[in-house]
Image (cartoon, rainbow, N blue to C red):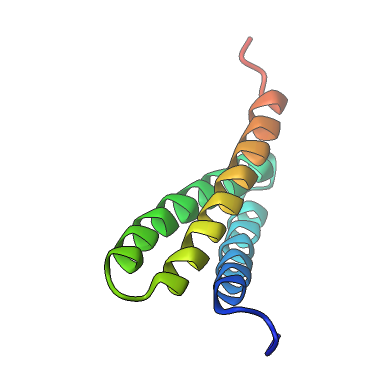
Length: 92
């Protein structure tokens, strides 16, 4: 991991933390695992976009790129997980 650029390290560590929290929350509520994981990833993705804005406005553009990359990955993962979780629910 020493050869990775700073943006990739930030994105990897940040996504790993948010997905681990999502798995823990999802396991606590097994009936809606995918929905819980998706909502945690959505919150993490939105938080990362806010952190991207703060880091990019300041002088650390490489940190901003990492937060933008991890925010995009988490928002994509949240869409996939929430879509799967909502398709399993019965609304009848």
